[in-house]
Amino acid sequence: MPKDMFSQDAVRVCTFAQLMQAESWTLELVHKQPTNLLLWTTRGQGVVNLHGVRRGFSTHNALFVPASHLWAIEIGRQTLGQAVFIPSTASGAFPEQCHLLRVQDGLIQSELTGLIEDMRRELTQNRPYVEEATAAHAHLLAIWLRRQIQSAQPQKKQKAAMRLVRRYCDLLAQSFETGQPMGAYAKALEVTPTHLTRVCRETAGMTAAELLVQCTLHAAREKLVNETSSFKKISESLGFGSAPYFTRFILQHCGATPSDLRKKARKTPL
Image (cartoon, rainbow, N blue to C red; front, side):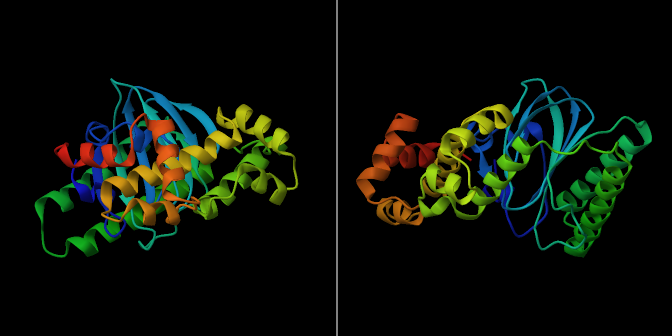
């Protein structure tokens, strides 16, 4: 997979097959999405965690993840679809919340497929004014999303547990790099760690501590793969008290040292 597939500065379109060429942790660990992201499933199914809510998705489902929201996904082996990464600075008012849209109308399905194919064509043919053209398509995509959200069935009022988990995910997205323990987040939310753990397990399918660990682990692995910074600097940027503590964390959750992970990434062809 090209390194710029997840570029934060330009629109990118790829198939699910291309998305899945990366190591599984890049998708399956909960992490903060740096760009707006639209996933359009045309065949198959999978499971997604959208900012603390674990849900299944299937054919003709559109998933939208705004920039700076937490998400993770498990895509079925036979699942087909497309992913569109849109910079947070792109024109068009994209939704501020995560959405899972079940698109049943065939004309609306074709409309979305057409928009994505037009974006792909602009990007692959290297035509003049490609940046302006993709910006215009991104704007149309934002309008498509807002229309579908507006026409969707009114959602039931969120339960208290879901509201709490989403508030927790908001806090994690803002400050998981500080190294605060899960208990500090529970205190900020004015609940006990036990209660936060229970509601996260019910809503997200994992405990509050596991959500925090996954965010940290994903960020750590990404830095090890994509940066040349020393392990000490990486550990400090993620709030670890020392480089040895960071090494133990990586070894515990990956079964390999930071050095081993970096060496493996450099040997793996893109």
